[in-house]
Image (tube, rainbow, N blue to C red; front, side):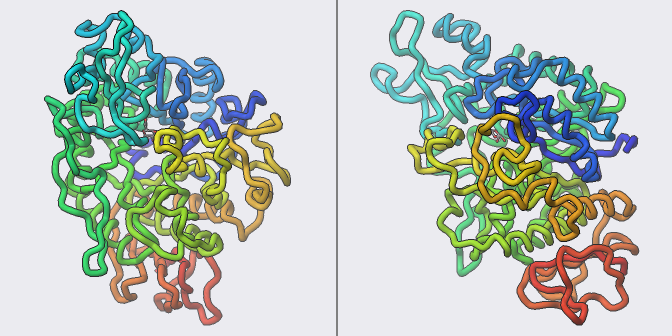
Length: 556
Ligand code: GLC
């Protein structure tokens, strides 16, 4: 725990603060709620928490539209509450990572207000990506870029003289204008923000869309380039088209920024750490972010989007280990977060297709949650058995499924509006956590309602119900995390595949004293002779075999 290299093996629990616990009775999670529930997180046996943005924000994108990077949103608490949280988390043995959002600010950020007020060609506009439009009177967007949330990535402003004028770039919602990373003010201000929180004892940052900051000079059209790439079926196999450079994702110049940030993190004692949210689907490209003088870790989205399939998972694990190995960085295994369909619901689908992680890609596919739950249990042992670190997204330890039937009128993700009501977006994985009781709000708040409604059938999934029930998902998480912590072979280090078991079976050794076997198929397989079962994700067969959708940790 005290080692400077803690991050190489860490399990980090993601706190989606709006939905974790409400301390002030307004139906929205906050710092007071989180402080009161730190015991739950510590009892799981994780090493750190990552907290989604808690800064002042109009919440056009759930806090990823920041007005002031060095303060706290009043609905979440105060700066003093934040400082107390950091201290208390440390007392619980938990390190704290915050979420920094460097690609864009809120459109209510003072810089943007100034840019709008001062008009075209002003110095204040240089901090953002303003451009004149195309067409005779500038009525067409400067290029063909599209927003991640749907629609064009450009919005035209009304100039101080009341006339339609320039356009500004927003790779996300119009309320999230992209900043100009060629500008010294931008670089300087984000460096100050890092120091501000590091000075307050924060142990590191998750970097939001870390691969987006730099844009190709001249802002050329993207044409028909798709990013991240989409799997295509060729002769019954799913493959990615070849990688090619993109005008605004994963530009080489972004690495300069991270070298600067690494130097700042290294100037602290103990050194602070970073994890990149970089949806870079080419493992070799991702490894560039992890060079020794850049970021420490990056979420492994290749693993996240892999379907429940032995060959597909083995492929992504091998690619990950090979590419991380070239730069000496530990992988981080992640199954769910606040942007994707919860993995229990993805694995529940009758058909398992690589790359599908959005609700719009899964909604029409038949599913069985009991199957999803078995697979999610097995996936936990796989995830925690692999070399490196891992992430747990709040609620997965309770076996929460995606809420796929939220009524239209409660949806808040900007994707819903921006897609013209064709994409329901990410709210289904953001529903407040059930803590106790038989009915909503399940102890989440003292208010009558929560910011997103909770399902009526979550009573069996509360922390209180699952605690002490040996068959529950929660107790499996607790056991696995504690055992992982006590097992010296786990975390960072080598692994070696066992190949005798067939393509549906993922079996590997971690040193001499530990092995993991995962059966992703449907036929039971025998376990290695003479091994002792340390932990199993489900019952073994009567003759000691490993059934389908089941995993074990073994002492060989
Ligand atoms: C990241 C966040 C996501 C947010 C987006 C824009 O992908 O995880 O929630 O909408 O960035 O900031």
